[in-house]
Length: 472
Ligand code: SF4
Image 1 (cartoon, rainbow, N blue to C red):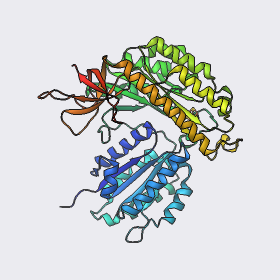
Image 2 (cartoon, rainbow, N blue to C red):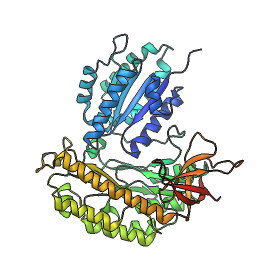
Image 3 (tube, protein in one colour):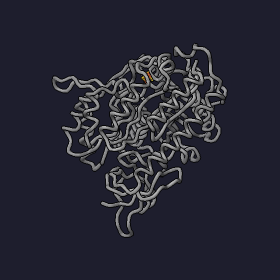
Image 4 (spheres, helix red, strand yellow):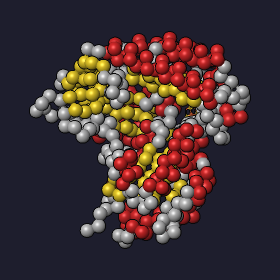
C-alpha cells in the first residue's frame, strides 16, 4: 500500500494569511493528501508538497520567507515547494532568482520550487484535485505535473483578480473560528504595499457571512473572528439595504442566537459613532486592536493616515465607556522617515495615556513601490530598533497591569486545542491567554467552544498570561 502524498504549509504574516493557509490545507486534505498539522514538524518530515504563504508587510517578513524557502530546499530534498502570498504576488522575479541560486531542482533535474502569485488564491485551490486526478501514484511526477498546471493557467491568461472567500471546514492548525469578510484596501498609506498585493477592497456578501456564522454556531463554536485587510471598509448589500461594518455586525447578531464576534483590527478614522453603538453589544468581544501607527500628527500625515492622535485617544475613551476595561492593543511603526525624537516621544506619551494592554511595535522598512520609500530623512535601523524596545517595554508593563486588574474576575473563554486531555489553552473574551485545567474525571470543553472561568493567578510562561479556573 502506498502512503497518501503529504502536504504541509508554513505561514507568515497576518490572520488572513493563516485563514487562507487553512483553506489551502483543507483543499489538499479533500483531495486525499495527508496534511501535516504543524509546519515545524513538516519541515523535518519532508512533505511531498510544502507551501510557504508569504507576507510583504515588512522587509523582515520577506527576509524570513527567503530563509524558510532556502531551508526547505536544503533540508527537504524531495519536497516540491510552492511559494504564494503577498510577497510572491509583488516580487515574483526576485523569488524566481532565489530558485535559480538555490538550485531548486528535483532529483530528476526538474524544477521543484514554484512561485504562485498571491492573487492566484482561488485557482490554487484547484491544484490538489488536479494532482489527485492526474497522478499515477508516482511521486516523481509531481514536479512536472505542477509545472504543467502552472503553464496551463498562465497560458490561458486567466484573471486571478477574482476574490477568494475561503471557508475551511476542518481545522488543521488552530481551533478558533475565523470568517474572512473583506480583502484588499482602497487607501493609500504611504508605507504600505499590502494594498498593492491584494488589490482594491472587496467584501463577502452579507448573507454568505451570516450563513457561515450560523454554521459555526450550529457546530458549537463560542465565537468567530471577523477578519480582512481593512474590515472597516466592509460594504455590501443585504436585500435592499446597504451595509457598512456596523450594519454587517447588526445583521450578523440579529441573525444568530448567541455566538460572539471578535474583530481583527480597526483603523481609528473608521471608528464612527454608528460603529461604536454596536461595539457596545455584549456579543462583541471586549478586545480591540487599533491600527494606530504613530502618536505624532506630523508623522501620521506623512504616512497618509486620515486622523491625528486625538482621534485615537477619543476612540479608546469611547471603547472604555462601552465596555468594562476592554483589552486595547495597537500597532506602531517606529523610525518612519522624518520621525524625530519629539515625534517618537509623542507616540510613547499617547501609548502611556491610553494604557494599551499590548503594543505591536515594529521598525519601519522601506517597501518598494510605496510613496514612503523615497521619503527622507531616514532614521537609522539602530534607532528604529531602540524605539521598538522602548515600546515593547511599555507593552510588557501594559499587559502585566491589565492581567492584574482581572485577577479574581470571571470571564467567558474559548477553548483551544491541545494534546493534554486535562490541561489546555484558552482565549478569554478580553483576549487573555489562559492556561486551564479541567477537574479529574471531567471532560474538558470542546475546541472552539465557550466556557466560563475565573482568572486565578498570573502565569508568566510566555504562552499564557494567567491561569483560568473552570466554573462552568
Ligand atoms: S489602511 Fe493603509 S496600512 Fe491598512 S491595508 Fe490599507 S493602505 Fe495598508
